[in-house]
Structure formats: C-alpha cells, structure tokens
Image (cartoon, rainbow, N blue to C red):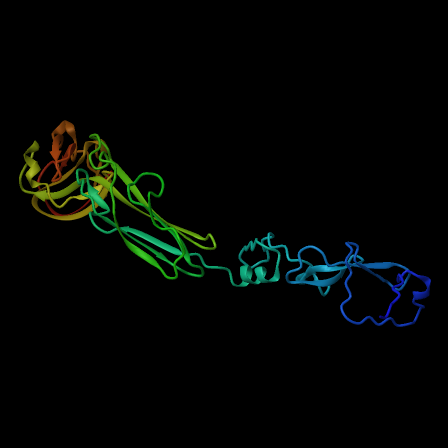
Length: 330
C-alpha cells in the first residue's frame, strides 16, 4: 500500500517564487467567506467573492473588489434607477418602477404593458327617464384584454357603493362580456315634489395580471318634462293638461326656440320649481308674456304618463300671434 505525505500549502517548501507558474488541475474550491484575494500589482490586494444573489449576475470589478453584480453594472455602466421618471423634453413621463434590471427597463420603457379596456351601458329600460318610470332592465358589460390576461371583472349592478357582482376572479386567455340585471333604490324614480333630477350609477372594474385596471360607468337619470307648443285655444287653468304632449326632459326653464305662428297662442309649460320666467321675443324683452299679474302665468298640478304628480307653471303669450318669432326664455 502506498502512502502520501500531505503537507500544508502554507509550508515554506511550497512557497511560490515570483514569476513562477502554479498549475492547478481539477476543480479548485475556495470555501471561506473571505474568498480569493488577488494582487493589484502595486502591493495591494483585490478580494474576489461570489456570495449572495447570483442568478443572472457576472463578476465585476467595482471599488477595489471583484464580486458578482447585476449584468447592467458590468462594462463600466451603472445600475438603472427604475423608480426615476423620465423628464426629457418630448418624452412622456414614464416611471418604470419594479426590479432594477435591463430587462425590466426595456419592458417598462420601450414596451410597456397596455392595460385592459372596459365598458358598461344600460341595455334596456332607458338611461334617461321621466319621473315615475320605475322599470328595471339589464346592463351590458365588456372587458377587453390587451397585453396581459384579465383576472378580475366586477360589476356594480345595484347602484350602491362598491362592486357587488364578481363576474370573474381568475385569469382567462381572452376577453369577457355579458349582461346582468340591475336594480336601484325605490325612491329614485319617485322623489319628493319639486326635485329637479335624481341619478343612479353603475360600474365595471377590470384588472389584469399586471394589476393594470380599467373602470367604466353608466347611469340612469330621472327628470321632469317641459312643453312648448302653439294653440288657437286660450287656456287659463288645468284644462290645458290633455294638450301636453311631445315634451322634453330638462332640469331648467331656459330655452330658445323659433316658431312660425298662424293666429295662435304660444305656451310654455314646465315645473314651477324652476322659477318664474323671463321672455325675450325677437330680441326685445316682453313683460306681457308669462306675467302672473296679467294672467299669462299660472300654476297647475300635472300628473305625467308614469303617474308622477308635480306642480307646473303655464306661461303663454298675451295674445294670438302670426309670423315667425324667436323666443328666448330664461
């Protein structure tokens, strides 16, 4: 059996003389935390270490130390600060954020993820209504994927704060769309007399796997109608109600209209909560129209076609007129 002597390399007999070459075969391991130290050629030492995070890193000489660094730090460059927004003229402000890597910089600055898009609308029942219309219907919603997969679609379908209907809660490959029924508080279509407008809002929230979010909303609004028309009949009380048709939803009495008359009265009927009117006819103020003192302005109780009762003003011209008139009410 052969015996081998294993002297310590620190022994003087193994000291390497300057200029000589030491060849090591096989795998050489440096197992201490201090690593391997090289000479800098002028009497100093350069430690070489390879500890800590190493995935994707390279050996780099920085500040007198050879160590593993992010590849962006090699070749004399510095690490990109992904949390610093760009401010150069002509370049939109971009804050890449995230990990300080070249890959993240390229993705975030030159190829940023496009967030999903969303939409929601009142599919049935009407988005603009007259007071008293208490019908329900459906909402149409859609979520369109862009860069990353959609992972959340949530809908508010009861007109109360928050998203009460979670349509989707895990990633999907494509888009998502559909229809849901909606509700709202019962007082919205039938508010107290004198209310100008009530509104309820619905929404959809769409989020993708990169946490980009898109929010869209839709609403239903209730208002009173106002009426402007011509008639040869002289109305002085609520007998005018059957003649009210073809009105428009509004929250104000202000209106400008041009009409051609043939020996007819002009009538303007609207909620009294809008206030008393002022008329300008063909560019001149006309105090004879819509004047309570002369009987051309009076109040009636009007129940609309949905059964909603409100108090209205009836304002009219002081006489029958013929010709084309430009009428401005304020």
